Image 1 (cartoon, rainbow, N blue to C red):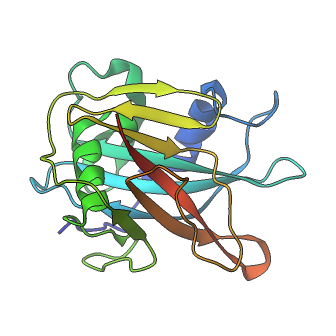
Image 2: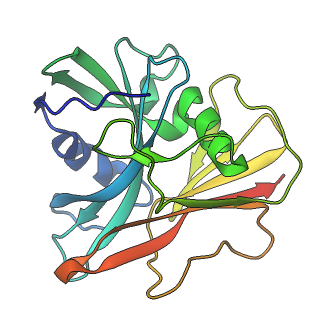
Length: 218
């Protein structure tokens, strides 16, 4: 199980994302820099214990309408070979030292564990508490079991999210701009064979939920 260290990060994750987000095709903000707050998310455990895996919901509060983005991130103690274009930045961790922070959609460890989560073979974990499951995260899968793992995924961004064509004959779509559903369980679009949904903090103490990822047959 991953150990959550409550320590300093310089720069912080939100500071890194403030620089990184505006260059993404799915960014909805204007010319000014986003004003971000961490609204929620969850973690997955790397079976090898080497890579930190986090799915952060970062909300941009700079405009008249709050926009919640899903930002999968990985944290590594050394650079990920061949993934220079996926680097969000580096940060100094108060316990672990220099950490290389990557767009997790382009990290094979995150993608493998996400596919395991969809299939029910991995457990979503609390974002900020060690060794604690996050039962608010829900998932479904109605297809045949398949093995996970492999090389760097082929990731393509569009105006709403990131499409990952996996080596297993499936297409995983990560919804970057979250569309909250009030008062009911969010469900995947028709034709999906699997999905992951989760929640985050909205304004005035509300709790919002949305589909985070959708899995389709290729």
